[in-house]
Image 1 (cartoon, one colour):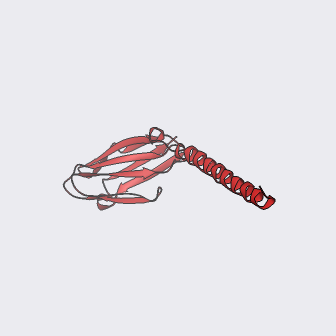
Image 2 (cartoon, rainbow, N blue to C red; image 1 turned 90 degrees about the horizontal axis):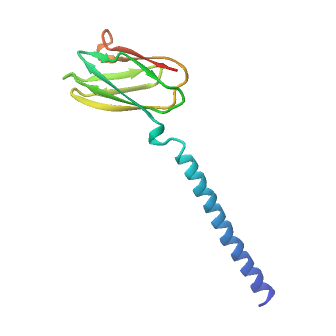
Image 3 (cartoon, rainbow, N blue to C red; image 1 turned 45 degrees about the horizontal axis):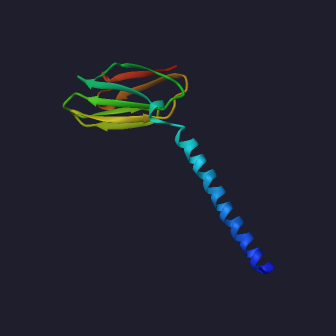
Length: 128
């Protein structure tokens, strides 16, 4: 085997092994990051809207975990579930439900309300 052919073989070997190494690192990183937020790490809670009021009006949620809130609108009319503190708003049609997903919360109290009935549809989240 000539030096030139040997050099090409070495380059191909290093190229292939570099590709395999990079692939291995990428798969490992993807595995680590995909395990960062697993379904069992998400805290799920349910709240309903009935007679233009939230039930329960107060939610106690853990800090540091993603949150999934299932909101069931038991009224015939639509309601907008909104929070300026948490930066979301979602219109929920009458007799239907919606899911709100929140990033992990910091300790504190966060207000939410129903925009269409702000006088009665009031509530808050306590994260601790």
